[in-house]
Image (cartoon, rainbow, N blue to C red):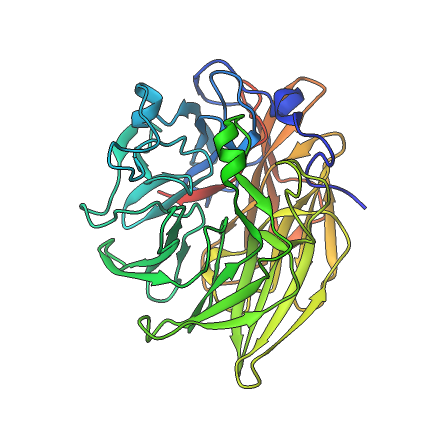
Length: 436
């Protein structure tokens, strides 16, 4: 079994390719091995923590975007830039004088998404920050003053309506979670509370064509840890809290949420979900527990499936594989629909799972350490074999990184191209392809 994270280590992010880089660079005309597909025209951007000074947890470092511009079969440039949030520029307190959260105090280190013409750097504790195509920070983005909440780092864009679905959490008073929706033009049109009983750490959620699904799981805010102020994540596993999925119809967003109990676990990342008759099928990376004594990673997450039977009010759970994986990604044109494949990081490999069977195909990267792989579609209708997978891969032999491009039709084969970057890209979190 391979692991996606350094199991049992709490300070891994200070060493090797987890350690930050010191310089912001701009380099043009990058060297390429192989041939970049001529259809690729856009930006590959990936976010992750790159602290300017020592931090106590991997999740708390300052956000840095690493980007490559691809056009006309060439890698035009590489840039890396810190996201210059208000609290990056000056010392902003986490809480305002009235006790409310200062939503501009942010590290913006987790994801980068594009919706309605705006590219946003995200962290779940704060407002998003808008950036330009050249990775310069524009400023905090609050949907024209309508968002007075944090924004999850894992919003979902509906491929049919163009709507942006997301939530915010982290308030120390009710409502602890609020669901939000923006239309295809980027106008915030919905805010509704989600009835959870405590301040849970809700990192991700799921969406189908007809539903959104919230994950109320037993990693909850721990005031004692927060008061100690040691820099650890202020959340701990609770044996008493329970675990459940909340289902809300998209066409009736003010209706009561239906809750379904599941076996206790934690989920950072959903691969996908879709409707199947009277049921919802949800696939995600499941941890049997998390953060019982500290904020480390003591056990692997593995790919799991839940089938929520809306008519019978039951949930069936099954494990799809036993490999330790993380960062599952699908063809985003199939978000909320029955996607066939999800690609995850597994040690020194990417694994592409058939979500119907759980069977995985590995693409081994030798001694290289990959980050998340993002699917870029080719021309034509949604076809998960017509396109490419892009991701940063660390090369320990030269202490540098490459942007690796795989042909989706030959996932186990050799990369079609490797773009050598002028410095290593530290292991980070999530990114996206933004089409020109």
